[in-house]
Amino acid sequence: MADYIFYPAIALTGGGDGALDAYDGNDLNDGDVAIVVNISGYWVYHLDDDSAAEESSPDVIAPDANAGNKRWILQDHVDGAAPNAHKDSHDPEDGGDPLDCAAPAELAGVQDAAEGTAHSFARSDHAHQIQHAITNNHIVTIDHDGVADDDYARFTASGLEGREPSEVRSDISVDISGTVKNNLTLYYAHSLIGGAAGALDAIASAGLSNGDGAIVITTASVYFYWLDDDSGAGESSPDIIAPDDAADGTADYRWILAKVQGAVYN
Image (cartoon, rainbow, N blue to C red):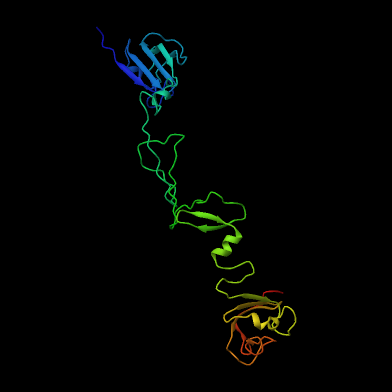
């Protein structure tokens, strides 16, 4: 009984490494067997040493070297095909070979994007826990059922709540007229002296209290003052300004310049 040799290959022709026609005809014997397997399918051949048929791949393949009459004759062929559908077998809920799944990590705060290292997957309806807090680099959430458009925000222990303007004034101890609730008042004027309406020295001294503040906004500068009720210093605008109606009981009242901001208007 003759000894037959099995020859594996991964390509039919081309003469390169792994091609069926790259086997030297001098090494081949009648009845040898070859199988070619690649992504396109597989082919089974036997060698006919006196075929002399014209090469016609894939049915008849001649060795590139020393072919003589030797030819590889196709016996069987199966086209490559996609694997059978089996995704349902890996369903994490009820598949026979379910994928491993785990709960996603909580979103505790600001973090960089990362691929992760877990050997499990997250389901499409997974939910991250959002760990809100009012600490550095954490996510702040709304902590108030009644937040409305145009509200202001105030921090609570758990996040932010909405505050209406009236509530904000109460929070910072200022009433709607601008009066601070410790009985100090902030006054506004648009000139320093002259006694006319809108001038700082025209503000009635009888209503002033020690520590009151004033802001004077002119076309050239913004001036910030506080009231000293026992100064008695001589008037020297803009540094010291006396109310025009200063009299008994208010004679020593003076507006003392605290700061001036120049060239705010052109």
